Image (cartoon, rainbow, N blue to C red; front, side):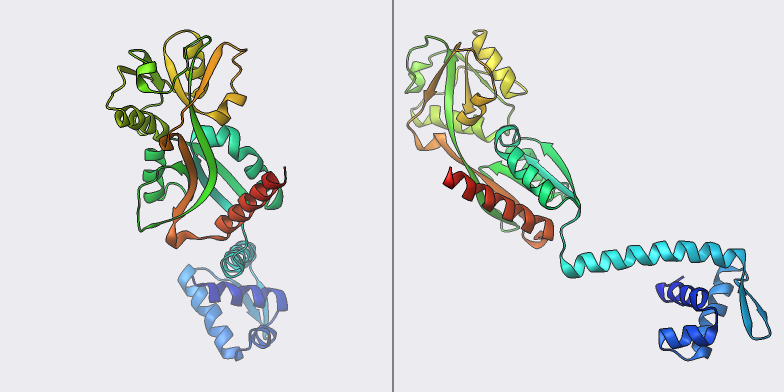
Length: 292
């Protein structure tokens, strides 16, 4: 069956005659008759009883008519969505845990309120895994740090982050790797941009972390530091979400590696209406923060 067949059937059903349907469809009556006969032949059923130049739809015609209405409505919706570039449908966004917990709630709430026809899906990962998900079309967009240069991707700055080292309460000031000594560093698994930056900070001073313990969340890292497992590296912004009850010491590092920019990235060929809506929400959030 073709869409033209379904439109012809709907017109015949609703007008009640070949002549009226032909006029509505701007065709000759013989062309409408041929379409109906071809449709009956293709399906192997009789759709209309013909008596004295009148058509009487069978139960099979009524069933097909009901489905045709649904199919044509979906086709029209799809065409309108593509042509008007109206935001809507599934929108798959990836983010680092820190961005998802601290930076994105207000942005995504604004997106949801302004465009309720968008169905949001948020996935958490490391910069490396999110990069791969974008390239493999498992995500439509991602908030990442230190994304490799890639001509297939477009990007825009989203948030500025400052990395800090957290240590148990009373720890001496930390300015250089030697101030950490042989303590274990608590961090995310490999592929985490913040972990990579901390390792690069060590190497900038000719040092390597003695040990790295991989933990699954910032709450786990904060809890491990409080328990005396070692020191951790976190974006300063997440400390507002992790209750430490004064049992941590926070050490900003005066080094370029400790100032990171979270970027929004997407496939250059996939600048959809949903992406445009997300851009607008980010700009509004930035403007609101600037006025605060």
